Image (cartoon, rainbow, N blue to C red; front, side, top):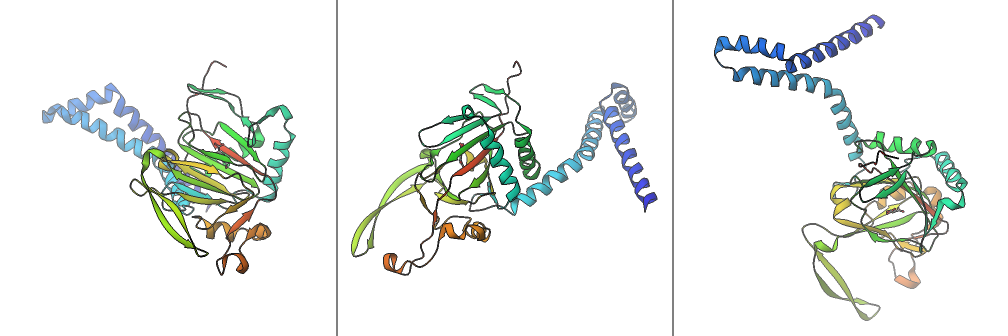
Length: 329
Ligand SMILES: O=C(O)CCC(=O)C(=O)O
């Protein structure tokens, strides 16, 4: 077995050296002129160029093949976690373990109080540096964060270089975040790791995609109520995602640029119709007590009441890449 492995390793090494040789030859003027000489025989010097280009592409393809295969394998694996109708939203339950969650909590709450920035409806820690319109004034991420940002980059295969910025948001049960779109300084992929209380995140198409609004009359408890339904361009429509603790949400491209995302600032979140209901609830055994799914006959007939009671704080880690980094600090 060993000798077979050694032979195959030597063959791979030989192949790499040979490819590198091909690559340098295809770029070198000496080899190029040799081809020209050969081609002068055929009186067609255009062949020299195309042969050089062919050799170069061939060598590059062979060199990059393992890398491309690896990226494709990661994309295929990620596709198993696609949720909803958009191609660019992924939900990975149990992305980290309970022990990882405790480790993160310990480190987050070990930070000095000056690290917290108090906002009207939540507080946050900023790690990785200051994001300016013109790029990032960088600060190295601590190892307790890079352990997880590396795992996210590695397993998603969606970041062209290491994640260099993490925002940690802490929400009390009645706090949330207004619908917003992340800024243009970030590479258009967001990975959000959730800890603590489950919540529902709402995605709404950007106002520029709104066509008009329709008022629909609906009978409820003998009364007629008016429901305003917005109409959106193409296939855009609002959707919601349940974010369970220890899960990872990733969204990118048009889910990043065409939608606003937000979390309602109320203690009970309705998850009816959430696009990952099945995936999230499958992994919610230890949080069953937070989910209201019993029949509430006295209030809403036989309808199931699908809501989450937020009884503890939620902490999220929004992990992103700022491609443009200032070098002079
Ligand atoms: O807490 C979250 O899950 C979302 C945070 C967020 O959208 C942000 O920090 O921009």
